Image (cartoon, rainbow, N blue to C red; front, side):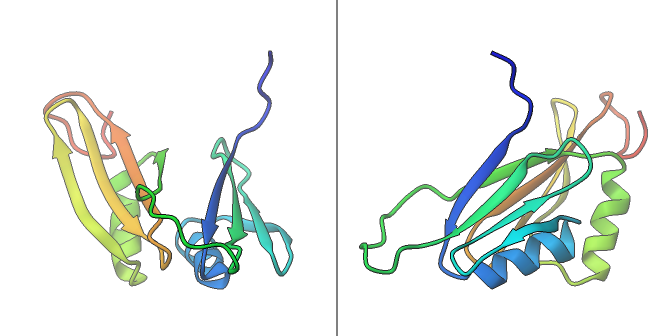
Length: 128
């Protein structure tokens, strides 16, 4: 098996809200937009995202909060940009003892986006 692409699928109530979140704050672009779903992509190694409108005739299932994680470079700069743009940051930039810097945003449908940068112990985001 040779995997050539990846797509993360989220079922959401507010399709426009999630589309705006991912295109405004995380640099995704619309590949295809229909009344029932939106396919978003980037030109780097990020997985594509498919936002699917929830079937309103089915009862809403309680599920774990969906999370998509992206490893990025220069997280400190990205965090500052997101703060300036008023992004819905739900966890401020912090350093974990195992060498990871992390921040989280949450879109209008509860999708958590985790941005991480792996660094040498004792280092700072954006530095090795």
